[in-house]
Image 1 (cartoon, rainbow, N blue to C red):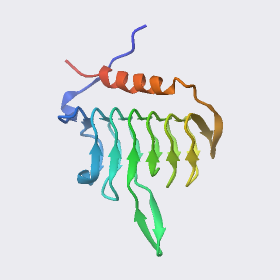
Image 2: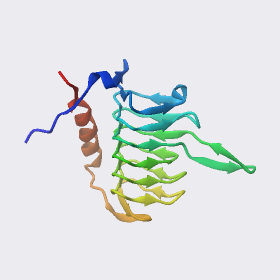
Image 3: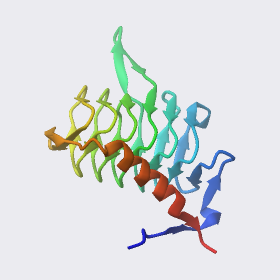
Image 4: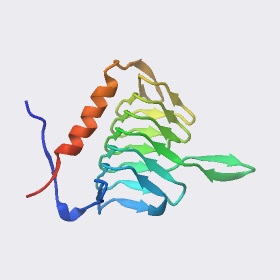
Length: 180
């Protein structure tokens, strides 16, 4: 069975010279602080708060509809200080998820309607199940699956996770086509 192609209205997306596809119906604040390394897809309703702190996003990262990226903060001398949000390559964040993590590694899959709280760290090659809520300061180890409310360890990921995530994100990007 052939993978399904996803079509989009070319008038609704901006495409950069590095292949990023950004929907005009997304909300990008502080664009000077947002670094997309290429071939990223930002879907309708996505909110990226680069006005709070820098947001660095790796290649082949896909944000589905209504994802919110808001840099995390820490308290220093009684004041809030926002910290840089780093997202690796081949990351897929599904619809309706809210992400305030300080770091997301490579080959990470965040399911639908998840809440990734402040200062969380998601190491390389991990998965967060649909509807999971990660407590603040949670660190998700490499090659693990977390889920639940609050999210806890569920299982290990297979060694083929790197290959699977690369195929998933590159394949989705290559099948994300403008309407004729």
